[in-house]
Length: 463
Ligand code: NAD
Image 1 (cartoon, rainbow, N blue to C red):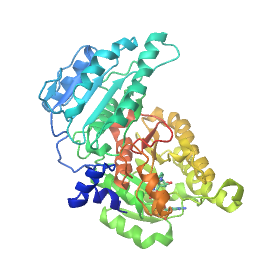
Image 2: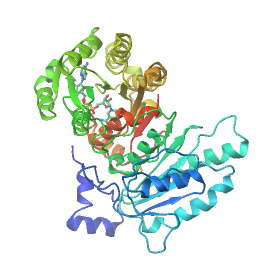
Image 3: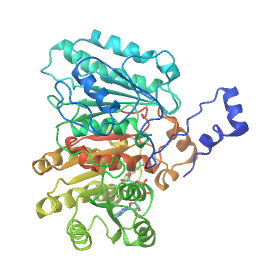
């Protein structure tokens, strides 16, 4: 699906015209390519204390190992970036990382925030701002909770001010998890990289120090077997592509009616196809059986199959309500139950489900869809603890407006408005959702449990 407006304001004569007329000019976002450098310029690490030293060491050290520091004794492979600890007057930063884990009063935010402010006018295209902070808890002293919650408001507002495809996101690290825990490191890298092109204004919680860093950041899913439902087209096909690119063997699942497209996807990713309606009572068993017999194991399940049957509730039929609930949530519950009781999904498994911003903020005409997608968010929260004992996780990704056949069916004017209503002023691409799913499916994300990550360009509606 193409966005003609975005193309016009970024090319030739129409680009000049748009500039003269002061029209909004959404940036062309850079996407991940294997082998690409993590950042195309220096990174500024702000904050004081052992945690900021540990983060700076991780970012600046050569692959041989970042020096262990203070509270963070782990030896890590460094990322070999040019790191500054104070803003240099002529530097054009590709990223600014604010390590705010030590704030105890809102006043503690002043120095790092104003240092970051001094860099903003000269940030590079597609720059990244990432905060690393602690969650504000009810048991915190009021000043501590104020400072920590203040990071949330600060980050979400700054993300709305960044231009030229820049994004702002945060990693919120539960105490006493160190900032060098695998999931903190992996989340920081995800937010710094082009893999998170359409993730903006989000704060992702890391709950534990579980997880394992990859030996090769370009192949974080090497050796894993992943099932993707609804893989014949759209976001599901992109998920199959990205998981395979990251090293996984993919089982592509879709309804028999989509068999031809499904076979094409499975061939493209050198995986296998399984024609299956996910609402079938034995869907979980058939997925397991296929993965076991064809590939010897099952590590990752991505519940992507989904449908919309939009109607105002006053006009809602039983069929429209029930079919959406059956495909979008009931099937996931049933498949998960089969996986969890099988005894064959116990080696640090990953479940990643597709929610939607409609399930968070609500959407007129989508009571059925939003009930199902809100349901997904509740389901992963309650499923995650069942997987933790064997190193597993369940999480969700909530896309906003993504350019697919599903959104191409939205009436033209509504579509134009909907795709501009976010900080990046454009719709996301299926690959953007797929990158977030690949991240949550990776061994390194083992400390992120029961969370929902939005991939919405910081949609103006909802959090
Ligand atoms: P799409 O309609 O393009 O593709 C959905 C795929 O799921 C199709 O291949 C379809 O055949 C398959 N499918 C439907 N019912 C199935 C069933 N019973 N069994 C097996 N396969 C089935 O949709 P999309 O835009 O790629 O969306 C993918 C997921 O992302 C959905 O869960 C959707 O709700 C979610 N999502 C999409 C957007 C967006 O903007 N496109 C936004 C938020 C969430």
